[in-house]
Image (cartoon, rainbow, N blue to C red):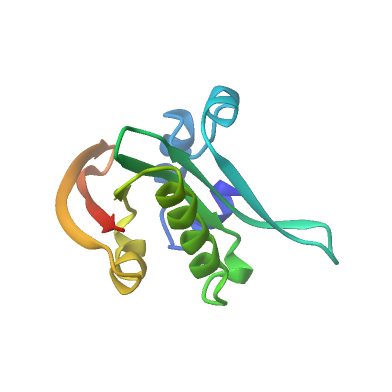
Length: 138
């Protein structure tokens, strides 16, 4: 599902394969066991629509994953998942949520109320690209 969601943005297969090999397009079993992970499912079709995972910290948690299958991008499902993630983090004691975003998703998080606070350089076979770092305050 992560691979399908990421491919929505038109990345080359070379980059997609590279990110898969680097573990950037997967969620590890240990992460599922140690972090809050929530799945959104279409109950009629018995299909997963999307999921997210959080990395708890003292007061500033991190949104590690938020993925939506391509056919549901733009339908409000990402909005619902993100609001749920914020609610889980806030009710668990977080004062904000850090998001290291794909550049194509930055606009979504800004629309949701997050603020751009920096960038994270990331190397790939096609050179360095910068991932936006955002903060959602509660």
